[in-house]
Length: 246
Image (cartoon, rainbow, N blue to C red):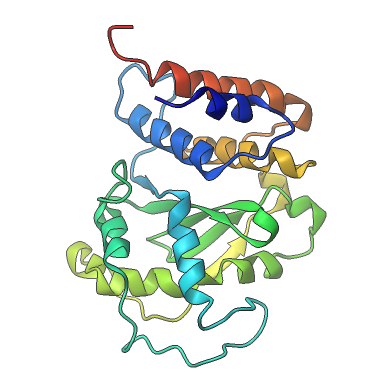
């Protein structure tokens, strides 16, 4: 059961969503996918990871590239690099405890917190072997997405290594890709909602993920509707955390 402070900050338009807010709703969305009474109809074969996944990759990759827009400070050798045991657990669907094995998915949704705490949604397409980046600030820099694609370099560089060392390709029989960085493309600004305030960033991210899981085009949400969405998200988390007898 979440605390009162959790819901107060979640509904507060002057507060940024925390990782605990984002993960709680992602957990709920994942549970809803297996529920016959869910108000949403979800697209199959899409996995979700928690906020901690990208954070861990970013911290480790910083040892090779502290400035994601600069050069490597030391050579990166895939042969000498060993993934952390918990990264394999993500691939196996054992982390978080509401995760899905990647070999049962066609896509994996990764929430990423990049520079200045800004959140974007990355969809790793395991069939096309590319990363699609949904950035609610895309309308601020409409000409290309080079900057944001560099910001997710930890995911682009380390996700292929995780798949190789965790046995993903052996289990799926899919084409084995080398460990070169995955291609990434930022989705057109017309395909994502337009964030105005940084404090609404996390809400936009959750709405985008919910739409992607449902196989829908990303919802076109206005900034003026964010308060209502915050309340709806809080209500869904609260009601689904109550004991069944309630």
